[in-house]
Structure formats: structure tokens, C-alpha cells
Length: 166
Image: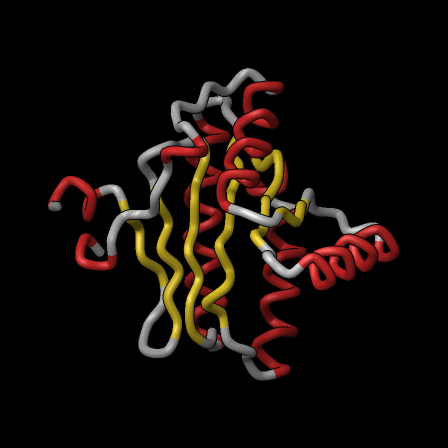
């Protein structure tokens, strides 16, 4: 269990948590839960910047698969700040290192709506919406392999570390 705990990075406090599974880097599999605050937005920016800068220093790339089903709606001020953080990340080392994020949205109607919004707004980032963790891992791994990164994770066998390990 200590080994699993060492391979998870936790970001957030009190009402919010982002857990990042580091075991399959440069593919980072994340689990989001709770309601983010402004402090959490700053912590998220720092965590994602650190991962991207490390990848850039080694001349590599990164990808994310995000399980966001546990998120709760934050205040409009926090949502605005998170949007600004995403834009800032896209213009930084993170934007240069990331091949994309695969966001798990199990509801097909919501997934389709998000894809349409992304298309209509010409989103700078490489956000993808998938139905399952396995689909996200498969697509993100393929994207990383296309840019010369090897990923050692079998999508069908993957499971996020148990909450006890966190």
C-alpha cells in the first residue's frame, strides 16, 4: 500500500481533491471530487505546471485521462478562475508538453453537447470527451505513442488505486 500511496499525487484541501495516478507517466490518470475553491485553482495550476515542466525538461510529452464524475459545481468566481488557469496552462510549458486531455463523461447527451461547444468555440486545448476510463486510456496512450512516448498500461486492466491507498 505504501508503494501505491507514493505513486499518487493529491491536490486540494477540505471540500475538493484531485488525485493524480503517477504510475503510468507520461500518462496521468486523474480522479476529481468535491467543490473547488480559489485556493484549489492555484494548487491545480502549480501541480499541472510542475508535471509539464518536468516533461519539457526531458524533451517529452504528457497526456491526461480525467475522471470528473465526482466534481460538484463551484462558484462562478471559481469557475471563471479555473477557465483562466486552463488558458494560462495552454500558453505555458503545459500547452507545449500536453498532447491532450481525455475527459470521461458517461452521459452521451452531455458528451455530445460538450463536443459541440468545443467545436463552436475553437477551444485551444486538446480536450476530448470519452464514455469510459478504458476508452480514455486507449486514446490517450495512442496519442502519446504517435509523438514517440511509450505507455505501459493496459486499459482493460487499469484500476485507480483504492481510497485506502490514498
